[in-house]
Length: 384
Ligand SMILES: Cc1cc2nc3c(=O)[nH]c(=O)nc-3n(C[C@H](O)[C@H](O)[C@H](O)COP(=O)(O)OP(=O)(O)OC[C@H]3O[C@@H](n4cnc5c(N)ncnc54)[C@H](O)[C@@H]3O)c2cc1C
Image (tube, rainbow, N blue to C red):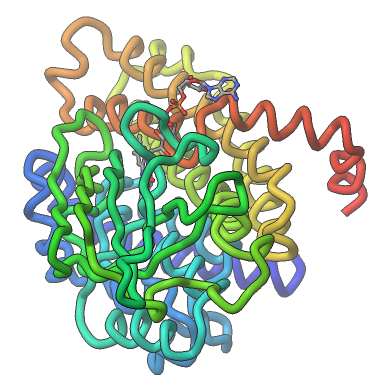
């Protein structure tokens, strides 16, 4: 085993212990996502798991003599898969930077980083990443949320974002909006949710309920230059540039959550079903191992270069499909009434279906792979 493999094995072992702490709250938070604060008292060292940059995290996890800030995709996929093996909804319901933090790291100046990460380091703070809109999804070409000059040196933000994780409970986040027409006209805005004109409303959902998907409504929300991320950069290095890199960076993480749910369904069935019916799961063990290797490779690639999302798309397709198929096969193993008699299994089935949409559907991932193939990037990935 290489030193790196040893490190990741030790990190995974530690994460498995943390995962056990999520077990008592899993069904409660699923029933009532408003109870997410319970997670803060679960014993889980959530401050160390948030992925804050080193300068904002004076007390990181220590594994194999190393400080682990959990700000690298490789570390996140290892730890979050183990937590998702108990409750994927809870993983997403924890306070912390997540996707918007990556945008702030990529585009924010010193003051914006301090405003965002300083606040998160101080107290439990939920954040949001506002891209998707009602009517035209996450396609940036038809984005209709706008930032317009207010005639007095500032701006006004107007529009609606839908299916935004943690939106109704967040204190700060990033909204993508259009300043001009065309793909280079999209900018990223750093925004506190207590501004006038901003409302976050929870949506009723079936899967990953802990995440509390929300609708964000913004009506003439006042902005200043200080809210515009990357304002001093060229137009090619602003909103859409950061959004694409963020998707590439976080798809391996979503894949690890899907993998965790798949593994949970497998483990649950093996523990509670008869030997004869478990035979139906033959073949899934190998797929779980293979998908884990692909997710890790995608995470390494994302840490190396978040501009290339080829492996990230491949991992997301594979992990999502595995979670969907394995959870359904698990239900078949138990037979009629399975989801009624086994609430954790019912939750795995519901949670597994949300991953298809998070950070782009399977169709979008396949388009990414086709583009990578046509441009020869698949060969580069194989060589790496
Ligand atoms: C659990 C969960 C968490 C989420 N979290 C967030 C969040 O925090 N922030 C946020 O902004 N959004 C979030 N989303 C929204 C998510 O990003 C979108 O659902 C996703 O990007 C797809 O958008 P859509 O659902 O509007 O589908 P659309 O983009 O409208 O797509 C509809 C259908 O058309 C297909 N399609 C789209 N474009 C093409 C194309 N070019 N060629 C061929 N087919 C195409 C798609 O595959 C799909 O089948 C979340 C969604 C879920 C389920």
